Amino acid sequence: MYWRDIFSFITQVLNRQRFRTIVLWVAISIGVVAVNLLTALGEGAKTFVLDEFNLLGRNTLITLPGKKETKGGMPPITGESPRSLTLEDARAVSRLSGVKTVAPLVLGNVDVSYAGKLREVMLVGTSRSFFLIRHLEVAQGQLLPDSGLQRGEAVCVIGNKLRKELFTGKSALGEWVRAGGSRFRVIGVLKESGTSFGFDMDDVIIIPVQSAQSLFNVDGLFRLFTEVRTYQQLPDVKRKIVELLKQRHEGEEDVTVISQDAMLSSVQDILDTLTAAVAGIASISMLVAGILIMNMMIITVSHRTKEIGLLKALGATAATVRLLFLCEAGLIAIVASVSGLAFSHLVLMLANGYFDDIQFHSPWWSQLGSVLLAMVFALLFAWLPAQRAAALAPVDALQGKQQRGEK
Amino acid sequence: MIELKHLEKRFQIGDQTVHALDDVSLSITKGEYISVMGPSGSGKSTLMNILGLLDRANSGEYWLDGVNVSALDEAERTRLRSEKIGFVFQSYHLLARLTARENIELPMVLSGVPSKERKLKVDAVLEKLSLIDRAHHSPNQLSGGQRQRVAIGRAIVMKPSILLADEPTGNLDSKSGADVTLLLEALNEEGITLIMVTHDLAIGARARRQLNMLDGRINDERIT
Image (cartoon, rainbow over all chains, first blue to last red; front, side, top):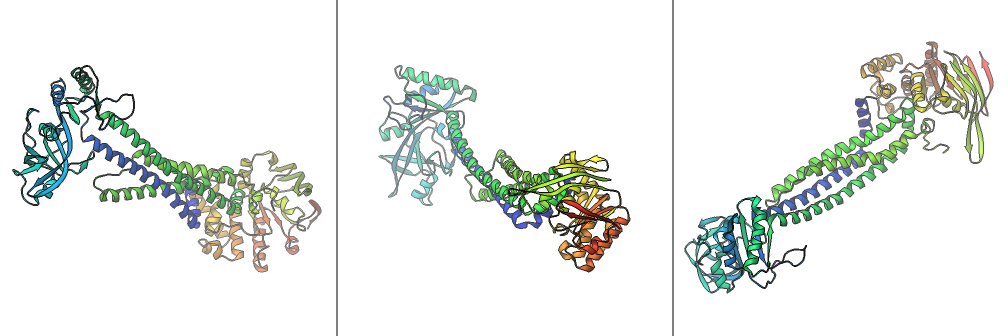
């Protein structure tokens, strides 16, 4: 038989049995859509989370006070450590070769008040470099002065939300606000950047690190960000920081230095597993579609026993009959996959138009995979009925008998 | 051209063995017109199925144009069937989703005849059977006699040398039945070997050679 003839034969069958065709079409489409949407969801979440982490840039090392005692597990997030990481340590690190800049970090909550209004926000004590490392920009005014970690000035940069709450329309620049027990002059307002990395950067007050230390009466740092000059120097600088701080802390290795990559790769692993699991669950819907195909095909074979007998009497070989049934399933699977893919793209397009922060896109492997899976399942599950049809003896089939000797 | 030697066909029904064909030997020459008659269960349908290569005998030999077809595999029998044998059934067996034209075309589609050649041959058959104005009707728009004509068209489109008709007039009124019989006889006049199973004694008597079957044996043969 010519392919063109096979195609027109099949389309006539599919057209004749429209209800069955539509049911199979919808079932396979749903499978393809499910796989694509769920993987897009997983991939979207992964991209979103990785972007959050990426805010720091991959040239950044994070030093935390405290040492994890055993291999594996997460480093202490807010662990108590015997010896604090000090501003002196930060200065020493900044003098290491390969280090571009360092940004110390002290965190705390304070009440900020202005003209009788009071708001509790997060206070970030840091240096000018922090803005560069975190890619923060000011909408008005300027960044913290570059005072080289020497002295703490009574100035602050505030988040945009805080500005709105305290100043309601008035210009904030040059005004003095009270934070904790001290007064700070507003020299800059941050551009709106939304929540990132767990901080709401629109609702913060940023002051020089020394000012924060005296405000909270601490001499330790919460974190120390170190940006290296080139990515190649990262492992080298990491080792040097550990050595330097060990030496400064009387031979005790009591800090943890982590790189962006280490964090990223573990987060990525988790999210990849999640995506794979979700895609796996979606594949089950494909399996269900496959079983539906098998059932429908078996019913078709019994309904069309006489026709199969006739085709054989008219010169169709067993191979031709099998081919006709397999192509029928294959054709439905192709059409359903394509429409399923188109539908998933439409849904993703709408979702991406609706959500700004998080973008969903179905990766190529899931698109290809879902189509292949649909084809494989369709053909696999059509194989048994097709084989059954091909094996029918023409004489029995013509009389509508499915098995020999059945009357 | 057809030579049957000691054909046996047994069916197992429950724990009873039924001899559908019991040592049947038969020789048919090209262009013969044969009717096969007999009561139900006498083995005439089984004989037709075996002659049409739709079924195999349990023992004995079937020679078709010098080839022992009992020994061939299913694919080769299928090829021979499509080249040499045309079938006409009592209930027409037309595909309802296809038009008259497409039904006639079907055997050529299945055996891979190019579509240009198909068109010419189908046109010729439609012309011959005066079905041209019915070519694009589907079977359920046709009368019984027209349906059987379409089925005959399908049987002869591959230009077979043997035409096997199993009760071709069984579902038709006497007028359409007579038309169909005349058509089959006209084809026989042109040289096709016509073998027809029938219950109708009047129609059976028209054949030059009449076989009467009983209990799986040819118990009477008459040549007029």
